[in-house]
Length: 236
Image (tube, rainbow, N blue to C red):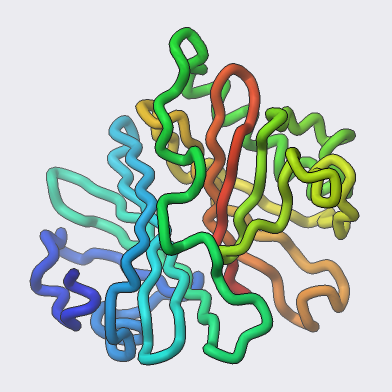
């Protein structure tokens, strides 16, 4: 709400709050704060009470341009002490238009089945097998434990689905990412969700010379399986 209103004074900010946009230090009320025009109506939250982190994937708008916004808030003493953001713009004429952001993402808010809740440590360990699959070039050798109904939503589009023989994740061709750097950004223990920060590293010309993808990517993890995931991407 503060972002769309172009008014950071609405936020409960700590002194010397740190703000980043697209992995670079920035000042509040600059960058997207100046250009955003509306709330797009989609938001998926990830709440880590132990680390005092609140994160979200959000849809915003800059006139006709859709903005896929990843935001992570670090909270201390009930104040926002740090704000990390990634911005991915999808123009009206873009090739891949979001199709899954007009409603809640499938399964991302379903209750964890009784007796299937994993520990915080187990959830983080299972989620980190996903970037390991990227590092070696396939999720089988990476030991990624996808559930039978697992899927991936990337920039608002389903790009893999274990229930679709044409798009099963274990069978997809994956660019090898030898320099991928993953980190557990938040663990929503109540919702059974892990949010990873990932820098995909440089892979020759795949992302353009001098570029690497940076993402906040979320995974539902319970019963030792990964049942769903979504991400917004950003090129640094």
